[in-house]
Image (tube, rainbow, N blue to C red; front, side, top):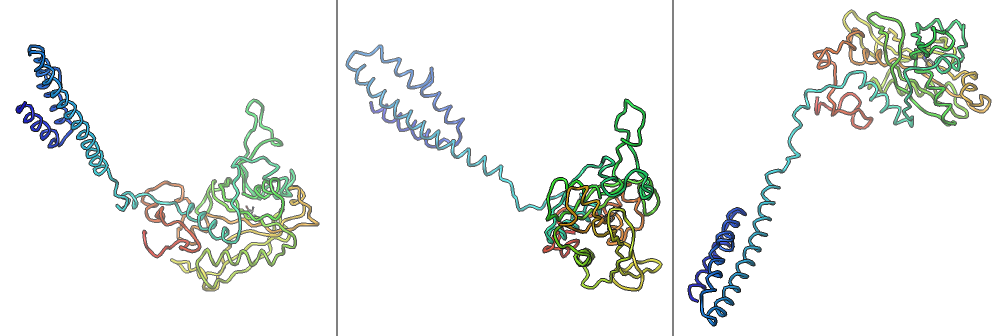
Length: 369
Ligand code: PHE
């Protein structure tokens, strides 16, 4: 009996001092397993006289349940400890810098899209999205350019055969859009005035030199409401240009022009200084053309299902690539599409500098660039 008490104490100490689950299990097997110490002792009971058998048996059972209890308790404790250690070792330090941060770059064209959306976004414009492959109705007809209209020749259009099982048919052929102006019609078809949208996107014309590539980028703008005037157009685009070039003062002028879908039509120039090696925006006596614009032609409103006696508006089309070249001093447009990583490293932007009117358009104070 005395031995049993000692043995119990010894075993309980062992259990309570065990540090890992594996050790605890070894102890359990050594005591309670098939060939365990206590199991053996219980087996030995059989050879004892009845009275001893009863009293020792009782004591052994008590010891056994005490041991089982202790093992269970220690097991729980060790399991919790193990979990805690695992969690600790798997912690992510979210304050570490993002290592590839300096690797990727945002293309200047994407940057300009961001900037344009930030500026017009603050003026309350929505951003609309439309297809690159366009039917002639949206690209031409609805824009006051019926078949054989001479203005169709102003743009060197890529035509697509819309039914490969039949010979090419000029009348039903699709085009890859020559401008984003089709989005004026698509917007009017979907939405009643007041309308205030910009529509950025890719555009295509058969053209190739230092300032023209067959694929280029535009942002269309459309505002329609009651009592919209040319003054709104002028003020809106003037504010845009100042915000875009990040200048408080910027000379601008509107030159009369012609687009079939606007009347009157104009092109907007901004003041600059052209020297041999440099172009300085906002100073000097030279002019640079930056966009086409005008009051939406009544025929266009009609084609879009809007009553021109009730509503009027203005539209504009920005050449994104040209704006990128001007703002960031990139001399050759063709380099935009060469996918040269060195070029992108030089002219590209850090992805974390998202353009905003409050945080800065192209410059966030040099925090991450
Ligand atoms: N779509 C014209 C172009 O591609 C630009 C423009 C858009 C002009 C809207 C007036 C109004 O040149």
